[in-house]
Image (cartoon, rainbow, N blue to C red; front, top):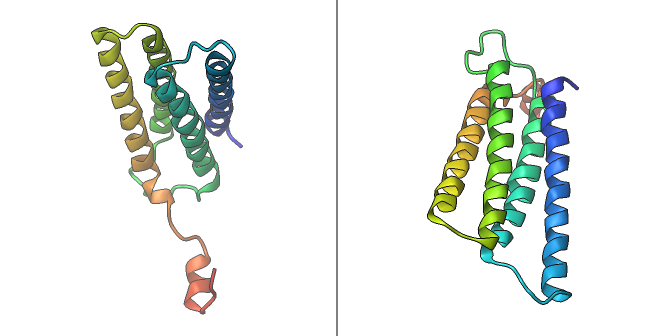
Length: 151
């Protein structure tokens, strides 16, 4: 497993832990302290788990598991993949921070920062899968399928 894959997977695990701890805080806040929380915290919790953890795990495993890029593949670029890792990590962390902050005080500036960080998350995912597109191909299975094998 090479470095960029490890970055995606380990960051995914860190985001999962942050999400679990956020859920713990939400549970204590609501059921023990009786103070509750806003929709912003629900969104931050859900988002850090689904995008930060699940999506980054998918990206890391895809990068590790899919066949190597063909030598003539012009879309695949390891530097672009590493850049998407950093864009995704920073924008996900910032969105989480901004949304948790919005749980306590929501301002127009925070609303804009949440939207901007979301745009960067979407950009990172588009760039990642654009670069990975050529790696989504049959490697040997097309021959077995042609012989009638079912999967």
